[in-house]
Amino acid sequence: MTTAPAPPSPAGTRAGRKQIKNWSATLVATAASTYALDALAAAAGVGLVGSGLLAGLAQPLVAMFVVLSYACWGIGLRANLKANQALLAATGTSTNLLSKAAYDLVRHRNGSARAARLAAAVGYTGTELAKEAPYYAATFGATVLSDSITSHDALVFLGGANLAAALYEHGLARLTGAFLHRRRRYASFDTDWVPQDYLDGYYRSVEPDELATIAFFVDAMRHAERGRPVLFFGVGPTLHHVFAAAEIASEIHLGDYLPANLAEIRRWIDRAPGAHDWRPFVRHTLRCEGVSHPTDEDVTACEDLTRQKITELIRVDARHPRPVDRRYATVVSAYCADSATDDRATWRLLVRHITGLVEPGGLFVTAALRRCRGYTVAGRAFPSADVDEHDLRAVLAADFGLLDGSIEVRHTEQDAAHGYAAIVLGWARRRVDGSREWRADPR
Ligand SMILES: C[S@@+](CC[C@H](N)C(=O)[O-])C[C@H]1O[C@@H](n2cnc3c(N)ncnc32)[C@H](O)[C@@H]1O
Image (tube, rainbow, N blue to C red; front, side):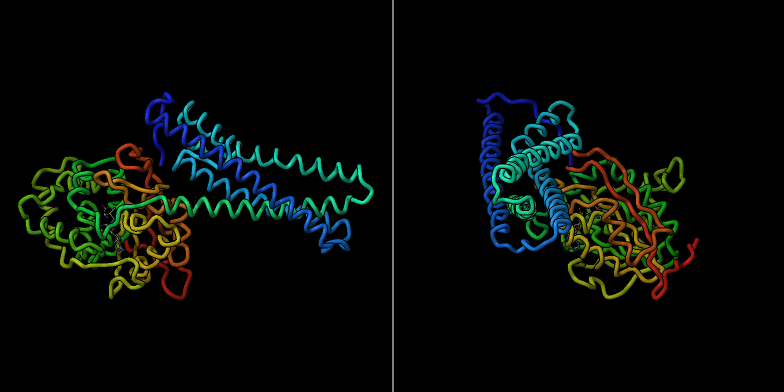
């Protein structure tokens, strides 16, 4: 998620006071982490030499140990760089002063979140490398000045210090992650979701993400087996994706976790007063299907056909391993699993449960917010799993063939309005059990 860079604020304003708070917190965290790292690394280095554990090791093996310790340190540092970037993006603070300075400078100069993240990483890594200098000076100085300290001792010391630094970087990354996790308080579907707010906020007109999603879904439906029931999983209070299945489905089943969402759909089916107006979305669907100038009659006919095909409204929960007691030739699930959790591992599990409903050779069609940590509905932040096209490809890889499928990214730049800048769209065919072959496209 990217946000516009904030202009510099005078110290007297609320924003100015926040900046002072962020810099103070960063200063304290930098000092604390520097001392903690130094103490830990020095103690580990001295301890390893003193223990004599590696005393008998031949020089080439000691050299290998040092190289390995650098690799471990690099891995730890990488984890910490990611955590630090997340911390900066979420709070404007860092555990490294130079990293924050570089991040803020680049953010204010050119506004690019990616460039700012890179600057933060360079600042952080630069400081960590600079912190290594005293270790080299101390170890090699001691080797030169003292007869009792050998070059073997110096290398063991360095390796021990590096391993401790690796552990430290990992620990700090985990602490930062836990801090961010606790801080991020999302609204809950169980208590805070208001279908009408969602419809008002997202579906008064066809916005860029839905222009792209509907076009993609219309195309994906051309790969679906005709004359079979289609399940929409996590449909919410919406119908805008459903029209794309009206022609090909024998029946349409709509599933969602919240009865209030299904009640909203029921109102549309029953043509109740105040039911949401989906006609602009129907019109867009028809255009994507090749009707260049859909008339009002075309739109009404599509709505009527859709109403006729919807035969079941089902309460589903993606946390359940078998959320529905049957399988489908086509399952469509848009912005559901990724919008139900802020945790990528949980997202994977939810996707597996949903895709488990696709029969062998069947079609799965999906959409997710890309690299988004939360989207807003009437001022409340709901979670998003921060996933991208690589995550989707990986989660589908075990059961689905992407040779006969597609995963695409669309940049929609809706950060200011909703909290995300891009979406991931995908369709894939489930492998026929027991083989790595794909069933031929039914078209
Ligand atoms: C952002 S809305 C998306 C709705 C619709 N598919 C769309 O594209 O607008 C997320 C939906 O996921 C549903 N949801 C949340 N947790 C769920 C769960 N555990 N199982 C099934 N659906 C869930 C919510 O009720 C909500 O309707």
